[in-house]
Length: 452
Image (cartoon, rainbow, N blue to C red; front, side, top):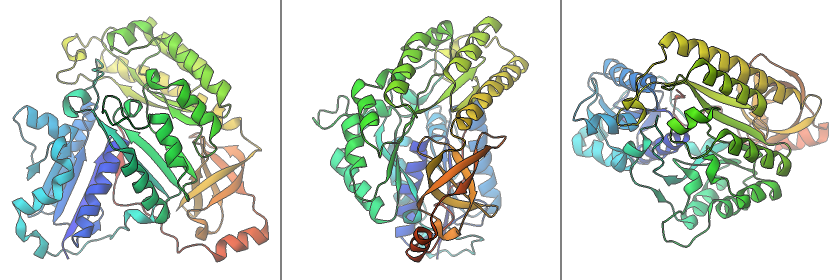
């Protein structure tokens, strides 16, 4: 049987798209394997959010071509789009596919190498299919037109579009029937769902409620959303429906108004703080996570200190911290990159210290409480999973609980802000769950996913 290996860099939208691409290959008889293993086709769903992501994307293409010089090495995603727009190429790649044709990769590979279906490799690791996952990403929207000063996405994902809600709900039913317990609703600009599509369908809040109502889906989590797109209706939905996870990733980027204006972000720090206050009043256990950039052009030490103070005041549950790097075509690339690499590293370390402390403090609030945890996989002989408000919990228990929602008492905080817990389940209930547990599967579909 022919063998395909896929890997994903960057956002949850990329993760969803990689899974759908993998399903096309699996349906055609391909074995799916780890990206480090020998394969006949390698697919890299690339990212260009930072210079580090560009570098990693190119490295993976070279790595794949070295692993099997005769393989078809395909790169798609935002870095591929960027390279194509410049009329360039990527060393090691056989095919570069733009974002518009991303979901036609299987057909493109067959056009390039129709004999691929007769190939055969000996994979080192055969990975299970998507339907065996407990959590699944569900893409509902694509494209962005915000044109933030640091971001290439409006140039690499150029068309804003929303999927029809009936298609989304139908896919949710299929995921529920396959054993998925948690859905992560995502989009490039997910808060703009159905905006300007003319379908007259539900807005994002109404869509989430429809997804949450699907039998078998115990949790619905929303991916990253722009603060200005969090409506009162969306807050009310989170406050009223128990299946909507109290967790919002409110992309922020800076806590200083001067830098926010330079980034072309359509809000200021006061707006963000007020939104967080409203959310915490309506949804007391809500986890607020975010992205923050250090070293944007013009960021003085005083402005950096403003972001540190902002992060301390908000008390984020978790934060992705980035060091700024110029992105082609963006407004930021026209500015002098006047913060040295050494200063960026120092500021990144200072910000990371602040957000690590707030992550730990958030978990400490729940010590001694018993929370529902979705068991995802064993890790070093210990079960792991997440609470609804995104606390990672490690605890001892039977591996057959994989995929179950179980009560766990949080006992201690680890250095990374996750919790150590104790399974709190009466013996008769544990016996019942084990008797009806499916055969445990411990790996998700395919993909080594990295965030930059």
